[in-house]
Image 1 (tube, rainbow, N blue to C red):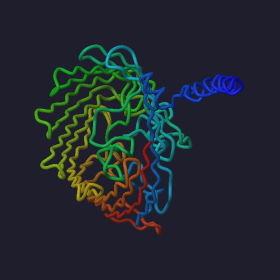
Image 2: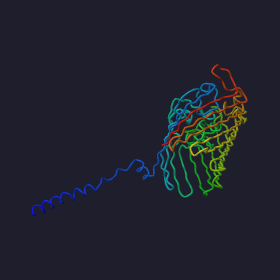
Image 3: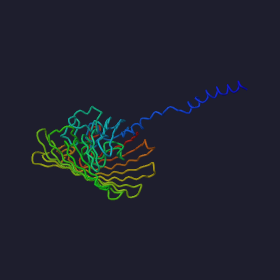
Image 4: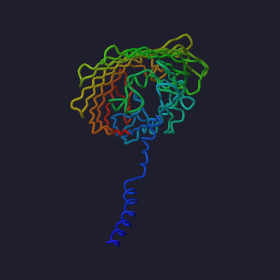
Length: 381
């Protein structure tokens, strides 16, 4: 009996630490997303891969497109990455990188040519672009950013995930992509915000002519389904290597959700510039677009875009060249299948028509119409 008691005591002595050790699990290692969440840093990105086909030669011939000027090609259009820390109070910042074929189009001066509208890259070999990089300070209803940031103009945006069509509208290519300067936003209420800023001009990382551009804007959301945004800019922009002219633009964007599955959007744009056709002259272009978006099912979306663009002076497509002075119309139908929160597949058909024979085919023959089709895959993370 004595030996049995001693053996039980010894067993218990060894068993208790074993039980305690088994119950004391090592601390869990926090995952990267938890670390970033705790630090207030957000990281997001996406990939845009597509196949495009055109019945005209839009690679080396005339194109009214911005990103999808490929005759018959698969391509990585965009890989986008955004890292941001934007607290409601105090200092923060954001960096947005774009890699892929589309990055060749959106470069700012000095890599692009500021005489073109929009600027045409003089070195279009780089498929890497620092699209946005700005510091931020927020206090109360006021937020100020300084650096390089996206324009206020337009319904559509550079990032593919922010649009419901694959191809960009003509109006998207008729406004600046980015600005470098300072912009302030005042949230006067939940329904009204005002914006004001000063920058180097249209797509200018450094100023090509030393003249600054003033921007003003506002967003009004009187009721939840309806939003209207108006923005305007004015400033000196180069017209030749030795001449400047005041460029003024006005853009109005409205969106109204009629019923839960149906949303209608409208956009109007007007741009004019002095001294484009010579000192003392003024040229302009303007256009409007209609967007109709309908959620057929929770995973199936249909979008119709109708657009009219008047470049009667050839200011936008030819900087005053009469050969491209024309009126343009386009109709686009895009159907998207939302597989899950991360992946979306799109199919699109688009028809463009001009009042002049500006489009060329593979033989060099010209025509007034252009037909394109596309398949697109979008992955978000």
